[in-house]
Length: 80
Image (cartoon, rainbow, N blue to C red):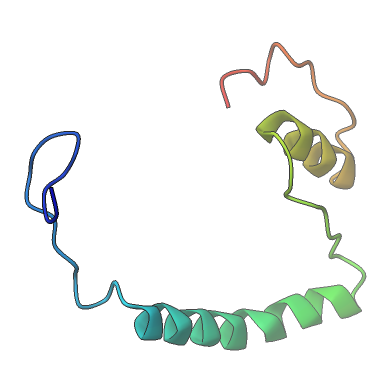
């Protein structure tokens, strides 16, 4: 039924800040404010890009390799 949560039956509504234009504006501001910081550290050779695609464990492995921590025991990271 429209306007009703399928799980709990509560009323669904859209907040004013939950609109495409608002999200686009937020993303633009975020990029504008973070890009200079990333550029600064990138110029110092301190930024490494990794892919965040894939399973959590795969991304964790990439991140650990990127920060020099090498491989992680899969059983130790299963709580992530």
